[in-house]
Length: 335
Image 1 (cartoon, rainbow, N blue to C red):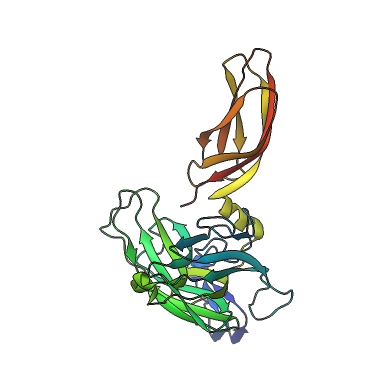
Image 2 (image 1 turned 45 degrees about the vertical axis):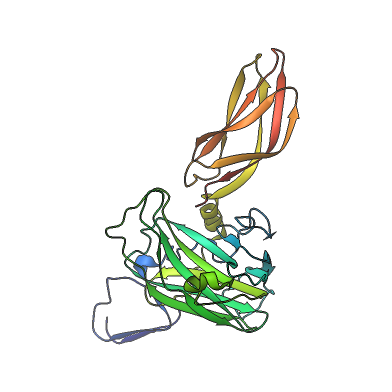
């Protein structure tokens, strides 16, 4: 290659290099090809998937996929879906949604209001430099704190935490980044269901000072968008994965659907029908049946079949029973 080539925009650079004479200038962000796909370890960091609903006021997974609301000795808090104005330019990439946490403190020392994502496998990013980036704002100038930690699973080593980071929010959208070293897991014992965690703290009493940089008790409205956790010392542009891909990643941990089973069973005996999930789940999930309608006589209950299906067992009460059941199910394999 002779002469000069200037390339603008975001570049996916391979390790083969460029051979020949002259020079090559790359503009803006260069993303190594070894991590150009699925470099974001966060699932649903763009807050597009809300299988369970669009708001919740209790602890647990109740609305936005892969994000858990944690309320400990707290006042009131609501996690909800919020929509960007079409065509806005404050947060790049034309995102549709962001998450809002509105909290009212009770000023107790044990209080803690946070959202958390559990990332499968404690070996993820272990021994590496990692960078967290996200966009955020609040109803007035307020701080929040982020914390990263390693959970070694059942029978594994004790939790390892990294010093928290404080972020100073204003009423306008800002991009925040923090880079840190993830501890090695060399010499650790890894048990079942290990994971790494990322938490956003919005209010925290003095009992949590070491985990939140003495964030303190506060009420307010906090908005978060485009969360990305990736290997390396630089925050690259937010990774826009196809919606269908992100949805399937979420369904590995939780999904719902409809079922219909039935037929004829003799007295005291029953039949089993398999219901298959749209994707293979992380482990054998816990299955719940709801909104069930029964036509005929008998009983029904779910049985665990495997990570890709469950079995509905239905029992007749007389030789002439012809029974149909239909309803909805949810399958939970969250960490």
